[in-house]
Length: 471
Image (tube, rainbow, N blue to C red):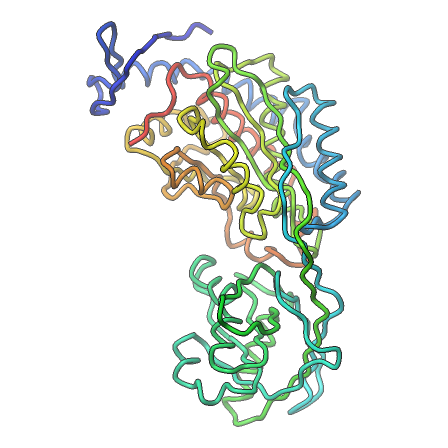
């Protein structure tokens, strides 16, 4: 396909309006209309990628690859042998796939193990409760903690009832609004309970839907605040205890947790590339994280995102395409602990930040995509809208705000344009960090569409003559 090619030295960003220059120097200038026309010429390539991913010989490939990995190694908790086995398997897979510059970049990551855990309601009746300890939580003494419960629905209520909390187990029955609003109870619940003298905290799982399924995740202690054991309970048990105390019942729980924190261990971010033909030093990064929690299979979070990122490069390679810029796949490690591997990658590579055109992360499910979330300048957003028009054959053309991801936020905050895949978040947070995160939650046809979106966007942005403009 013949494309418009221009060379620019000392480019300056101008207003991005049709007929107005976006780049200009003494020798040439480009209008937005010219850029629009350049992108439109990728229609045949986009259709070839879509046909291969959705209808052709590559259909279901990302699903089948993912199933083989998670069925082989299971969940992949930071610091675990299963995570390191998965990393080594993926290293070999990427080499065998014929990708370039396949290598492992060493990082140090946390090592926490949950051990045996249980919670039993002793009063007003006996009931064993399903729980999942939260990442980095300490354990209880061997005999456990037996104490009366204080049920609250918010941090504000906890503060109002602070004198009642001392010596008790605080149970949070916070209503679910959305993940970003509600997750603060999981991350900060133990600290806020400890500040008012609680012995432990149990948090209603941060989930959009529940069939008696606890959901785990990371929690954060705070310097100068006592560390207390903390776990998530089911939505059903949190609501039940709230009803009980509203009737005047006294609730007593025995909590046992064998959780332990160990010194950081060695691990790796996994990297592979298709090296750019014209600007190999410039990068479009596609990514997902390889680690997971220690429940389920980590198929949805984030096996799907990692494998459609690999699939994007495979599709492009299968079609014999080589973009002008380097397409770099990164499979992050220890994302669930707060983007630990990604932070170390950023610190290692940020000296070359001016060469990153776009950073992409899929970490919110690979169900049927509704579009792309994007963070960048108005000029870059206008370009991305044109790129997404190429996906009209599969009806995924929308560009939303707030492109983000734990692993790419370091780059976005430094001004690099960032994109993430948007799909059914209600479904995602029904399975998120639970025993239900298995291949049964995945749909091969939906993964095909997600992979097609990921491949078209990454290839076109990597092959356009200019990098995406920044503010």
